[in-house]
Every structure is written in structure tokens, then in C-alpha cells.
Length: 341
Image 1 (tube, rainbow, N blue to C red):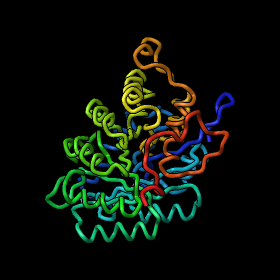
Image 2 (image 1 turned 90 degrees about the vertical axis):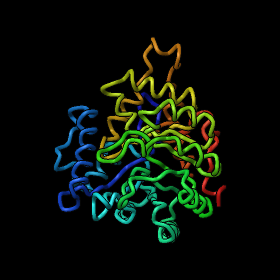
Image 3 (image 1 turned 135 degrees about the vertical axis):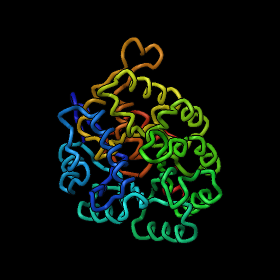
């Protein structure tokens, strides 16, 4: 929980990783991938929050617990696995690694799974097994991930729709999909938001949390999301601009609020690219500049409460203390795990 000026905020960090990008677990593509991540980290973080590259490659479990919960204010953090085995032979950030950490820190984490429709029947059985073993309510998808000669897939592919049907059958209602900034050497167009349109229409019982809110295609994302009530915008990668480009961030959050509304935006640090402590503090202190308020309005305390945790809590049916709730909280139109089972 974070408290400022007598107001409490329930915090859900909706997108965190415990990755292994060490030299013993990467090829030249993996080396370029983590270099690109480090570029985001070093370009958009305040100087006092910069890590060395060695620590960034392979931080410890103790680092993570300290940064998220001891100083970072998170009440819950959601693990979003990313495999990338063509670049990191042992996996970049797997559900098995995440589940081990979650087991050692009860009530701290939500463990999500992942799928890749190119894995066919074997992948469907693995998804069922992950659901049985870990009780997953969400999956993280990387549509630009390389697999052999394939350099990505679309949510509108018949094979992907089959996996989404399986998610709906199992009650895995939260589909987090990386759509937005590319990461070397992945292909920019494989992160295009267009395929979300088809999937969201076909599966109104699933929530599609578009991580990074489609940047740099914010307009495309907003036009799709305003038509599809089960599409949400995740602020990972967008919210760090609050430090170095506050007017740009004001435009992004203003557009999201105009098109999606305050119930369909979620906070995330994308740890360990950024530290949640400074992101939470700066967001609570942030206000849309006066000369932009005529177009975008002002950010209220209740809006900030919803974005920082209450909206994600609703997606994952997390128990929030009554004193940390906001006016109108819980009225958003999203699918719940119970409703889909």
C-alpha cells in the first residue's frame, strides 16, 4: 500500500519478471535483446535508480522482493512469463521459475502462464497442465516471438483462436499481450495491435490487457479499444515517460482516459526494467498540465486509485480493504474468472 496526504492506495504491479539474461543463458540475439531492455532502463529511469548492466542481466530474488514489496509499495505483483527460448536456451522468464518464488512468498504474487499457438496439441496440453498445477487466471503472449523460421503469429490466426477458446473453457480470463514497442531483434509489425480486434470480438468473455497500450500505435489501439469493451490498456513502458517526458505521458494517459475510461487502465512497472517505487510516487503526484486540462481534464484521487491497483484487483478477484476502495470501483465491464468457468 502507498499512502500520501492521508489517502491510501492499493497497489497491484501488473507486469513483473524474474529473468535470467546472464551470459550463460543467451546467444547473440539474447544479448541484443537484453541490451535493448537496458537501453529502455537507462534512458527513462531517474539517475538514482539506474542499475549496472551486470545486475540488470541477473538480479537476485532478494533484490526483487525488496524492490517490489519492501520499498516499492506493491500489495500484489503479477508474474508475466516470457520464454524466448530461441534467444535464451533455458528460458528468459518461465512459469516454473516464477512459481518457485511465489511459493516462497505466499500472498505476494499472482502467477500467470503463457502459450504459443505454434506449439499445437502439445502446447494445449501444457496450458491445461499449467492451469491445473498453478491455478493460472491469466496468460502473457508475445506475438513477435521467434520460433525456428517463424518470426511471430497473430491473435487472429486459427491456431491462436483455438488456444483462446481453451482459455475460455478453463476460466483463464485475462489475456495479457505485448503490443507496442519492439525489442531488437524482434519485428516491429509483429507487435501491431490490429489482431486484438478480431480476438476481442470473438471472445467477449475474455479480457485483453494490451500491455504498453499499443505504443507507438496509440491511436490504432484507442480506436479498437473504444469499440471492444473487453480491451484494457496496460501502462508498462508508457508510465516511465512521466519522469523525462511528462507532457508526452499526459497525452498518453489523457487519450486512454478519453477513449477507454478510468476502469480499463492498469499500472505496471515491467520490473526489472523500472522500479515501482518512483513510478508510484510520481504518478500519485502527477497532474495533467493546466494548458492540457481543457482537452483531457484532471486526474482525480479515485482515478489514480483505480489505475494503480483497483482495476487489476477486479480482473484477478483480489481482496481489497474497504478503506482503499474508490468511488465507483467495481463497476467496470470486465470478465471475472468465476463468470467464465
